Image (cartoon, rainbow, N blue to C red; front, side):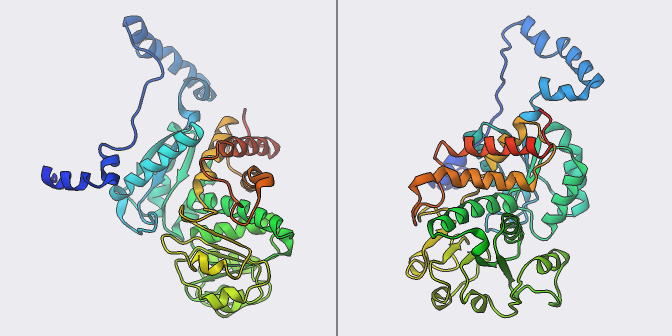
Length: 396
């Protein structure tokens, strides 16, 4: 057991407002029914609870009506890819998972439970989540490193009949698509007219590429740390091999900078640096989403000298690409209709709904709404629920 910090050490930490806010954790569990006397107790617990348990045993679908399960999401992490901090382990990941659960509740009224697992093996992760799944209406995977995260999500989606959503992948992808839809509208182009370059082939880079292809972006070239991904390149893992088959119709085989010449869109998800001259070489009215935190691939003020729209992952610049714009509403919509999964169509519908919130206020510094815009979660929720019904995955 780790030694308990001395009180003087805790006092020093608590002088930092971030530590002071986290003191004691950010979550608690509250009851939704009163227990004022023996009658209340006999209904909330024994013997009354036995009647409910027996009914659910006879008809398992009743768990959705007589427990909290359909409104609760598990926020699951192994702590291997935490918020730009990397592999810091499950205990150190807990403040982030608590924060994620807090955002679920604050932005969409979804109860969420942070679960940090002390295992990193894919089989162990999948088995553990499957065993936990009866307690939850959905699984939000968080901060699991690539490429393991792809297999974990795919296997859980196959094994479970509740929504499984890796937010590092799909939350980012939804918000990027929404912002790009508006950037294209602002500059008078269709998505099919755009050629994009994505720097980064991790969880978010792969998911962003997939959703942009699904939405009809004309062509996308993806780069990893070794250069452009293309068919026939040696050393590609299965995820990148699949990506190579779907992307890079122009056959770019050099650097990110080379591929950017004449490109319409740059999306940075890599932590790398892109020189100003490469941004300047892009097509007229280009779009740059430099999303690495805390340091974007290119400084926003520098990029803005050469392109029409700039977005970052930071809150101190316009057009913040923030996952909180997506995941609360996505899960709220999926849970409301007791969806069995989250389809690609549901993700695209979420992005389109999010883009629509901007409406006639669209400008170069406003292609994506603020997380604090109270129209966001309801719009995403409604779109996801409607699409779940259209796709035939809704049970309510």
